[in-house]
Amino acid sequence: MIISLQKVYVYFIVFLILALYFVNRIEINICVFFLGLIIFSQRKNTGFIINLTSSLFLVFCIGFLMSLTSGNSIYDIFKDVVYFLKPIFAITFGFLLFSSLEPRNIYRTIIILGVIFAVFHLFSVLSVSNLFSQSIHTIRAQAGLNNFIEMLSILIFLVLRKNNIQIFSRVRTRFFFVILFVSFAMYFSRTMLLSLGVMYLFAMGYHRLSKKGIYIVVSIFVFVILFYWYLFSIELSIGATGVEGFLYKIRMAPSEIFYNGNIDVKNIAFKDLRYLYDHWRGFEASRAIEQLNGINFFFGNGFGALVDLGFEMDFHGDKLQYIPVLHNGYVYVLFKTGIFGLILYLFFFYGLYKNLNRRDYIDRDHKICSSLALALASFYFLTSFVITGIYNQGDLTTLIFGAILSICGRKVYQLKAEFK
Image 1: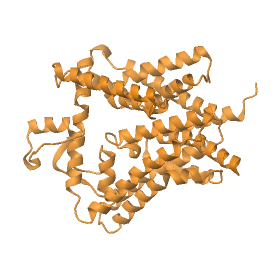
Image 2 (image 1 turned 90 degrees about the horizontal axis):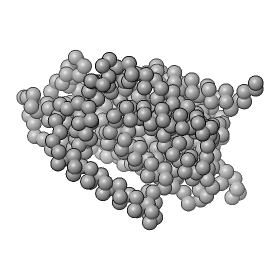
Image 3 (image 1 turned 180 degrees about the horizontal axis):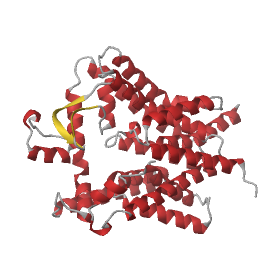
Image 4 (image 1 turned 90 degrees about the vertical axis):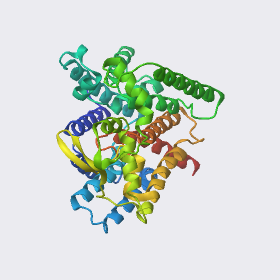
């Protein structure tokens, strides 16, 4: 039996991404990304991805230049250099790595990865002792908090089904989808649930101001309002387990990113800690903004700058008062690179929307790749509020983002060639 070079390359990519995922060291990952950029640097149409990531590179430049006169620790500066280079390198490497694969094989690779991760996750869930008597927090702590490649795999299945494209047999398609869906549900992740919903709207084109799109968006908006009205009308305990615990976490999700308290952090009490844990993302963000003043408001505190929480908190047995990374990606960029860096970060999303939401994407392949890329852009825009967005250290979805963009870049290159 003769195996095509495309299949061999698919297996190679799957093995590479699995290795990066299980090694789970950002320093190793970024070295692999950088080596890949050197190896694949001669591939065509790199101008497309350079243009899309140029805003992120300017954000990096601001943070690095401000660090030169900041007096911050060399080690902390180095960590931030790695964190801010990671999305640039990962997206570009993913773009180059997948650029020689046909679109169908790119989608097939992503789904295979998602299914493999789902199988590992389900085995981890089943290995939890006394599974049915454990809290959701315990299950997630032992089996995993999320996997966004699985989420994207589900979305790709839905988009391909809408466009009547089948890349696996019917039996295998159903089998893979069930595995992905069950694993997705067992993460009990609010971020994944909300992200998939928003990504689905973009992937299906409902973000456009059509009659159908407006009807669906308004319907979902009304449903969310009614759902939260219900959550706040019932009694949910802060220490609840199971479904009640999951509903409590959903109810607290909007208020988690905001903090309106006036707590004396120097004399913090236990009751204050309970309040802060329910609003932790907002609390750390407010502390970071308080520490921006003068010229630093415009250009940030530079790489290596640490946010002073004002008190020592217990973090897995260690006492921690100064933190290098925030959950809120927008405030994280603001703290390190100032208002100019934040504007550039927002311009990155604007550039993605402008380049991907094109009227000249007329054929089916154009529409599929652009809708999926827009969905991922919306995912990073949304998750920048809660898990650092595109600067999430352990996230390999940026590689997959580059893969989807490689299809879009190919289409743009073909369009330009046709008009010459």
